[in-house]
Length: 146
Image (cartoon, rainbow, N blue to C red; front, side, top):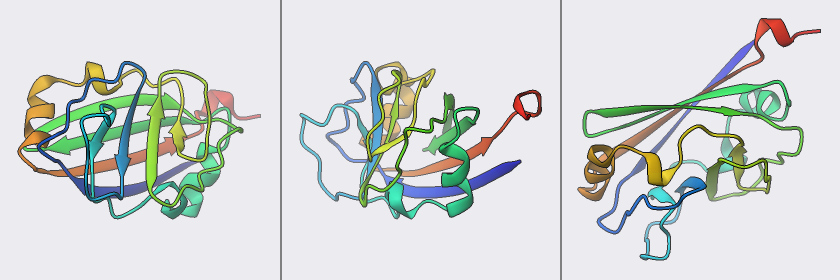
């Protein structure tokens, strides 16, 4: 069982990509230097807007999420996990976390990449204001099915 969705956003000159435990994409249009986890602004979706079949899978502890981030010819692939604790109802933000913490903004937990570990070439593309395409694909691995 798989489900997919795509979120489109853009970079911003103040993107730092420095946060050690998360990365975030937001519908907000602006960014300050305090937002060191934000890698994309002006997104066309928040967590609440994700496809219902994707949200259903992400709310399962067995789910594996593969996220492909593409900007300026650079692509990064991130692996994360779903969680029954996710609510996915924030209207503006999508947050991937290294930890198990879940809030209404959390899309996935136990991510193997966060803002600070993204390739600097990718961050530079975002600083130039390049379009950011976020492809999310969740699945329940067959060996985890009852």
